[in-house]
Length: 217
Image (cartoon, rainbow, N blue to C red):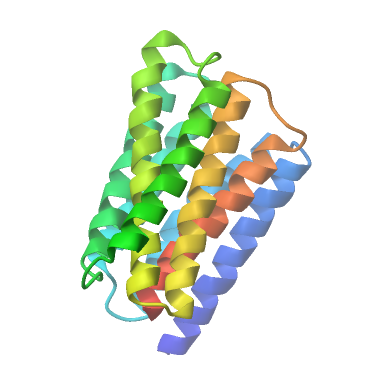
């Protein structure tokens, strides 16, 4: 019975993701919006069906659900800021969950990861900062630092515990960075072709990878 529920929830998640991505690729907003709020609850359900879940990761996924819903109306500043705060809270949960798995730090790994990530974040910010409204600059910087922290923790875990699932986690963290950069570029600068499709493809990959890490680490 447990296997049945796992397979059912996994199939529903894949179906919801496919509907959302197809809707976004075709610029069918109703189709994409109908599937988007289902994604994180299905991942949470899959986490519980698979065994004892990491409650911090589950909380992060729940924050993702709240952010997903709010960003359906991202053209409204209140909803955009609310979504930003929800995802920020989720990143904090993920960072704490990852920290608990790191047994120590290596100086070279710490320095290399921080320099690389800060360089990428700085480049990302300056590519957008001229377009970001003045009252949004600080929230954007804080959110960028949260993304850097998430990727930094993931990179350190990979150095400390070099396993396939640790690599999957780092892939998820970097995918989150990519997703949010594409989202910000579309909001503050200009949208690329199939903009929302690429936002959601990298976002779904990110949340799926982090959820998989919590289950199989």
